[in-house]
Each structure stands twice: as C-alpha cells, then as structure tokens.
Length: 380
Image (cartoon, rainbow, N blue to C red; front, top):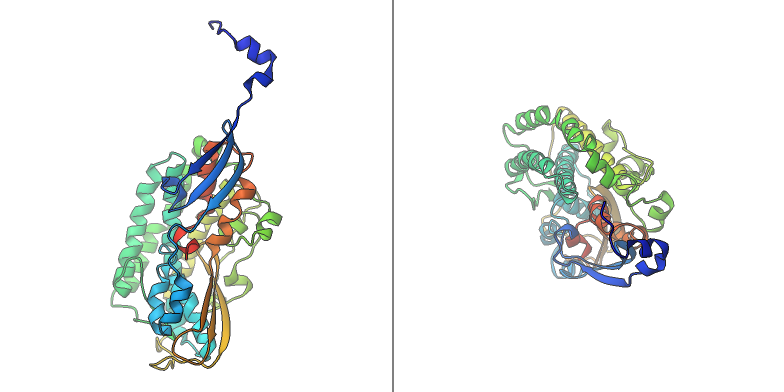
C-alpha cells in the first residue's frame, strides 16, 4: 500500500481530525421523510448529535372543520387523515358518534367493519414493507407488496366503489352489504396471500445487507416508548403487548382468534418483524370474519338528521399505526361543538429526537422508515 503524506500525523494526533458540527435540513421534500416533513439534524461528521422534526407544512385544520359540518358530512373527511388506513379514521369517528347517541350497531355491520378494517391494515402494512425495503436499498420487495396491495384495493373498489378514501362506515353501521361474489374473491386472495409473508421474509430476513442496516438500529426501550405515548407496532416491537383489540376489546373483536405480536429487541428489525407477523394475523381475522358473518341488518336505528344529546364521548381503536381516538363534544345540535383527534403518528414521530442522536446519518433513513408515521395525520 503506498504511503499517504500526513496519515501518520493524523493517527498520532487524533485531535487533528476534529470536525465542526453541521446543521442539515432533511426535507421537507426528501423522499425518505414519507411526506412533507422537515427533519433538522446536527451532524458531527457522519454522526447525528441532535435531531428535531419540524411539522405543519400541510396543516389543514381537520378538527376545526368539524365544527362547520354536520356529523354525517364529516365522515367522508376523516378518510383524508391517514389515507393509507382510511377505514380506521371513519370507523373511530363513527364509534364516538354512536357513543354520544347510544346507537347499537348490528352484529353483521360489526363483522363487515372488522373485515374492511383488517383488509385496510394489511394494505397499509404492505405499503410500509415495500417502502421500508426500498429505503435501505432493496427494491424487489416493493414489486411484490404492491401487487398484493392492488388486489386489496380491487376488493375495496368492489365493496364500496373506492380504492383509498372509502367512505364505507356510517353512523350506526356501514354503507353497503357485501356484493355478490365478494366473499369468493376475498377467499381467492387469502389463498394467494397465504405464502406471501414467508416470501417477503426470505427476500429481506435472509439478506445480510438488510439485517445489517436494521439490527440494533434505532433502539426504542419500552420505558422511552411509554414516556412518548408510542403505540401500535412500534410499541409492540419494544416488547409491550398493548393492542386495543385485545386489551380494550371493541366491535366484534372479542369473537375472533388472533395473536398479539411482540418482539423484545426494540430496534428497527423488531418493528419489521412485528408488522410482518401482523399481516399473517390480519389474514386470519379476515378469514374468520367471512366464515362467521351473521345475517341481519347493516344499519342500526340512527336518525336521518343526526342530533345527539348534549354530552361528550371519547372512543379509541387500534389502527395500522397505533391507538387512534376521537373526542367529540355535542351541544345538542347537528354539528359537533368540538372535535379532537388523537392520531398515533404524532406520538410515534415525537420519539425521533430521543433515538436519533448517536446514530450514523445513513441509519436515519432506516429508523424513519421503521417508525411508519404518515404526515397527513400529523398535520391534521
């Protein structure tokens, strides 16, 4: 190896390699920030020493707009919060409305909500898995996960006429019953999908580069996750088995057999494994909902002009990204007096300043991808 002038001097005097701290704006147009998010980083060489998210670039005033719309008009708007998991937005809002007015939802409608919700969870996790692989340099999984996602979106198109913003839930039930042939198409999809998680696992978990990029990176201890109110797969990836479908059962979930997936390591790889296993569990729930869906009505006794009595209600559910809650205040009129939305992405994003310092700049992209937040619901 040829001698390089000055190398011996640098090795004998490490202080000569001192670098200044540099401030780097990552976003708001950076592709790996998964939306209009600006991440302010301070770097000492390639190492992050300080990080702060800067949000609000697409703030739309979702909660304030509820006060200018009737309860029923606002249902369709909730889809735009987390557009990758639209069903959970409208479902959670309808739960709060039903609690205000003490409306009982028919069991058939509850089963259809679970069916649509788990299809939506599966679709969202497929988008995350493909994007996560691409974030760390693996393009091939994206071509497979988006193929399966297209199949799910075709099912939603058949169910409610929409592929992303569904407007399927209604106060008191759902908009439509299962169309002819829908159950058979879902069964055909489940038969195809049964072997897919194992294939995704082989593509990524057997890839030494993927493991090196994810293992031990972005470690989130359970205590820190609790301190930042982190929920969903990110919390379960830190070993905490909190899933509202089990811990605080709602809708028809007490009637379904499924496992709550956890991993103890708390790193980016653990969060990947939790979501991969949740895909398998969602497929189990979808199959059970098809086989056990009861006969009956799909709408409860909700008035045409919805005016709940004065009061307040807060209802939560387990969305693809964690706990989502709707707090509604009624003054007895046809419009909410106040609407407050608890979104999982806001709390999950807040943990970045705590886990990014000390990591390499190249690992920031992997950590952001593993958290799986979505900016539109942060900037609500």
